[in-house]
Amino acid sequence: MFPMNVVPLSSVIRYICVALAVGLVALGGMQPSVAAGNDLTIAAASDLSFAFKDLVAEFEKASGTHVKLSLGSSGNFFSQIQHGAPYDLYFSADVRYPQKLEQTGYAVPGTLYKYAVGRIVVWTPKSSPLDVEKLGMEALLAPSIKKIAVANPKHAPYGRAAIAAMEHFKIHDRVKDKLVLGENISQAAQFVESGAADIGIIALSLALAPAMKEAGQYWEVPADAHPPLEQGTVILTSAKNPPAAKAFLDFLKGPQGREIMQRYGFVSPS
Image (cartoon, rainbow, N blue to C red):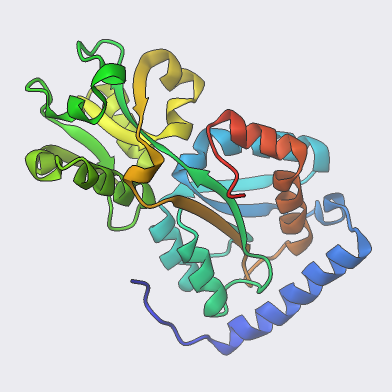
């Protein structure tokens, strides 16, 4: 599924330098403020949009480190990183992407962390006449439904989960001509929130965001209806601020970070 790559010598050298830096942080208990002169750059899957805005704000307040957060599809970031995109941390909605980066030398071995399991929901605006909480996946078959928003399954894990769920309920072939593909799960959510689509299968984390929670209603797709959305992160060998990268991961794993993630519907892999 994932392309194999020859690891460039420059990546090997970067890996050695970053690994040493991460090790020194672990041994010495270095605080993120030591590296606060440099920004921390994070590439994150778009299902993390609202959770990470809260998480980043609290981390910046606690550490003094400024975070540059880029949100998009996991697959696109995976490709960008292989072509030299300068990120410190990569948060994917599919753990296989960071696993592959670790195997091919683009991520520091030992930094892979499964940070969450995501969930998907069928979402409609409150103006919809459909009772999605009662109908569940059957709501997609309603005659009034002309467009169904999902993320592009070619590079968005949430899009693949949506297709798998429709196939599980044996309705995919009946609605596939109505699918409208967002570049990522956030764009799919925007389609249905704005009225460009009548209904959508989106991330629970987006449905729980204040604006969408106020504007719509949803039905949570059973976890066994699609492969688990195991989400993973790694520190990249291209990292320019390894101490802050490690500090951010520690913050995510701590009580404040876990509370924020749980608030947006993310389940701990354990």
